[in-house]
Amino acid sequence: MKKPFEVIAIIGKPRDQQAIQTHKELYLWLSSEGYEVFIDDRLSEILDDIPKTQFASLLQLGKKADLAIVVGGDGNMLGAARVLSRFNTQVIGVNRGNLGFLTDLNPEDFQQALRAVLAGEYVEEERFLLEAEVHRHGQIKSHNSALNEAVLHPGQVAHMIEFEVYIDDSFAFSQRSDGLIISTPTGSTAYSLSGGGPILSPSLNALSLVPMFPHTLSSRPLVVDGRRRIKLLVSPENRGTQEVSCDGQISLPVSPGDEVIIYQSPNVLKLIHPKDYSYYHVLRNKLGWSSKLF
Image (cartoon, rainbow, N blue to C red; front, side, top):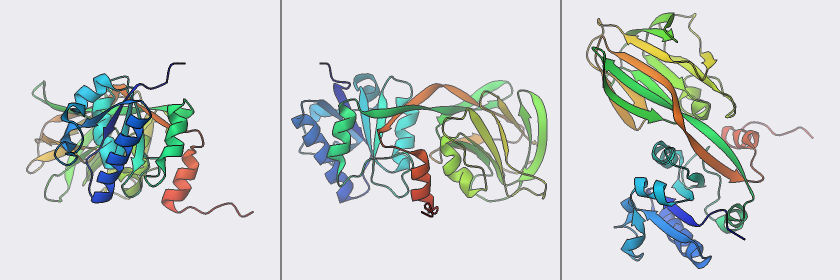
């Protein structure tokens, strides 16, 4: 019988020696199980005892691999997702970070859970991404994608900025604030949560717009249909340069008078979990929610 996965990629830049050991253990175990295994080439200097032929770039891994195992925290998963969402590669995470909302597997005991996944016993879900574009004088000046959120903010020095928000070209509101977080359901437990935004179930096709320290008491987070196109018109009166931050990892410069367009990407992250995965268990565990009374 054909295996669900034939070629497996190991991705994620390790922060410490324990994470490096997890990469090695995964490679050796998967190879011994008969899989063809490739590793993120950013690790080629660190994992010098693995043949150089088994290293490849993220783009190459997306083309080659049926399954990508991301080792690390959610930051590593976010970086991988922006590339792997372009391909038909399924993704699972081994948690070597802090909270780890997107990384399910325990690095101390991954074999049993991963063996079941490799046998086809897993839950699959699709998480949509955002596309963020900066328009200047009718031309796209910069563009990138985000799995969690796109954030308009003042850049290096915190100060208020002014902008108008349009939803599908219909004026919604203007605002003076430290910025605006446009979040996917995946990102609703990340920066958006810290800003007072709602937690959105991952299955929702919705976006949340969360103001950052607005200069009005009536400003509140807004949830809109995920298919809506968000346009932020940055006031020409703003001082200095603003930025659009994608997942806190990529920054797009924004000048006064620019337009920022944010919309749902045609690409999705094909995330898989062990059979016993429960989103609400993850929330209880990571956010310290109470258990049942009885």
